[in-house]
Image (cartoon, rainbow, N blue to C red):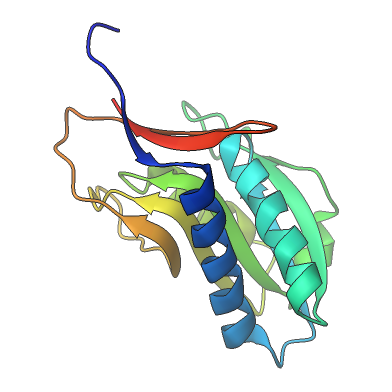
Length: 167
């Protein structure tokens, strides 16, 4: 990579965004009793774990975590959930990913999970780039950032340090 990366969120800022998102989720679902947090494999699953941990600390909600693996080249045929698909029926679900760019990954995740007939389905992302190709929006957003189409956003969660970068 010839160009330098620009840090748009450091560890402290990411932690603050995740805390705020968790509080927003709880505010909208405080009467629900239970939530299923489904992270999209990779950084989306890490973000889902962080949100779940905070939700368990700040609320009496029963929080269940799951991970959804999608092959971005063939998302409908290769989706794999690391939990019992039938357990999603009539439940409130939040799908979590790190960056919302075109909406492709989230729309396929939603399409897959809708077959389980959930009671409600929401989406949460750390960074929303607002470059939609598919008709989906994030219900819970850490940071909305307008970028050009040539730029790339990457999120990295480390054991000690995390960051969101503009490449």
